[in-house]
Image 1: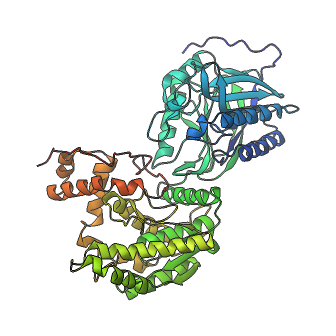
Image 2: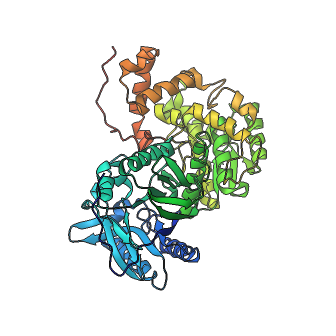
Length: 568
């Protein structure tokens, strides 16, 4: 590829060495003052490290993504003023600041990057490609920028594509053809399964096409349903990974680069191991829960511990996220609660070291049923009575949450939420659901994995945290005598596969049946999915682990007349 020569600013000396600092940090959406404090600390660290360049992640001062806060003129003004303030603070230093920010000009509001040196803004670049997907709708807020030109930093022409820009070959190609010798890419890229490898494949393609190194900085932390996993990295031509930051943790990454006959090369860079695909969902769930609790002003949580797999895994995640002293588990038995469940719940609480209380619900449930008897009359028992049990548990847990100031965690998994096997205003009560995007079989797999491993950056104990008896027993809501989930649902491996086909893959019913599933069962599951949309719309947020998470990743109408007629 032929490149046009770049005219460097006359007052600058072209350097053959660059020390680049990446601030992989955890901003909070809307907290301009707090994010500015984080940025100031990063700038001080970069100056102390003799860094030539400090780069922060996408829209750092506003947090990513601020959604309709961007419609508030005062918010926009405050964010731009904070960016100008930080730019001035580069005065008296030798560090050039690459600060992603919002910026307003005559063409509209932009997702931008401000480059500041010696107290002055020396360049502005605007994001060209605005994502318009299930997670981010940037075209709702921002005007698209022109194809960007390189920025001269220490005399070196540097391309600064912003996040989505590198998903489109034209932006990086344009920068390279106009002389960019290295690319700095700030990102706000959320985690989902295998996302880390997808990013690498993308960057590998850009580097191979354009022949220049690309440094990819990602933010870290939980923001509502999104989890940003960090794992910033850099690649050189020749498919060389030369830099990699920590996964699911804040990091400050300094690397040294030198100009060679073949272009810029990383002389010294730290490569952290990437979190494994087995560990990543646990780490993502822990980080999402921790940040949701802390960023919303809570310090501790409460949950119902039933003796089943879902609540046991939520308790273990909560302890790993917050510490055992911040987790309160309550068993709420009724006449159908088995001795095994009482024993297993207590064993789980003891293994985790949490506070554990037992609050029986027999008297309030029976009293409610007695009061309702004149209205119910001689009608036979059905799920109505079962739901009263669940709703009584939800009421008691909410009372504890209100009185003690604990955030209530709910414990339903994606399989149950998919087919509506959850009681609205009962076991769905809660502020956050760590299992919202995990199918039942994944919950089992993660419980088994956690019993054998101690994940990084977690606060819980080593060893078995989910008793084996809980993993081995048949799942049951215990809302009637001898009940198991398989009384009304297919085995979870079968259910999860059907849900994966319909929800994750958007397959036709004909194609689902072709995988070997019974046609009548497939039609029944599809109907259950459709009629449960109103419940899911009212469910607590939880970490998005897949592209098709209920809520952010899969948005279906509640009132929906569509029928798949590919099978009879």
